Image 1 (cartoon, rainbow, N blue to C red):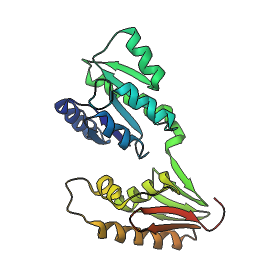
Image 2: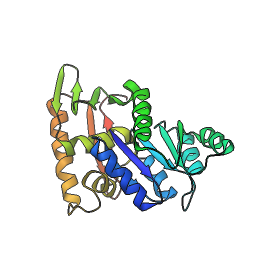
Image 3: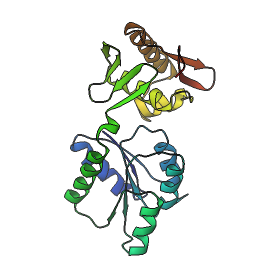
Image 4: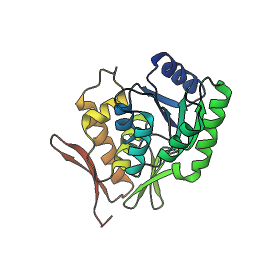
Length: 225
């Protein structure tokens, strides 16, 4: 499960990231509302932990914008504001739960687990064309055929499946799959896309990973999808 933390207090954001990672989650942190919205719209996260008082745009705006774009990722709004009016505004903006600071780590984890359970089967697989990506087993499935993916193959395929016919840039793939601090270059993306093309072919999938110069990659299928 991947969790996005949008919190401008860097020490708190990084401590939340460390705590969630220690519990087996994949967690990433960004420190302003504009970046939070951009990351959320990658549609690769299972939960968003969102502060309200953020630079560039506040948490209410972030939640409202991503809901307008039909992003249904659960949002746990985390803030020092405790007035009922603030809670109502947060929930109306699209938050699923509202937790006030200071908070107990056990309460935060309970909220995280409750929201993830509420998603249920919605996070178990992604589909495009005649092919499914099982998020639990990291397998591509087409009819009775299936193939397991490596960790990086899985993350690349997940981003492509979520974006579908929309382009995903090589820069986005490098940042999200290899990380900001990695020495990976665009050739690494090309190599893993090549691996995925071979695996899709091996299971008889009708999915094609198309490359468009300067725009990145998108999915197409041989039949009408």
